[in-house]
Amino acid sequence: MIEKNVIISNRAGIHARPAALIAQTANKFKADISLEKDGVRINAKSIMGIITMAAAYQTPIVIIAEGSDEQEAADAIESLFIKKFEEE
Image (cartoon, rainbow, N blue to C red; front, side, top):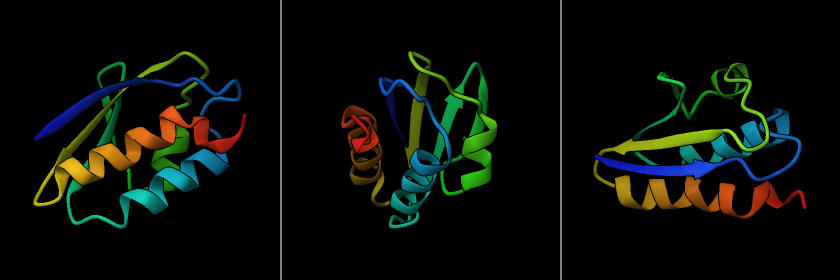
């Protein structure tokens, strides 16, 4: 299992477009991928689950990946956060 801590750095936070990017990226991998905020864990392959997190600017998130390609999966999701979902 891989865990990575990220902070939402795009000003708009997680809205529909970033949620879709996360889910599309997560669905490319076999690993189970979750996002955790304030102790609540959601499936990163679910757009609706991601949106319901209501994650705003500067919110800390934990990326959790478990499975055969967990490292690649966690790195790919982390990269989206680092690139601010290419919004800025």
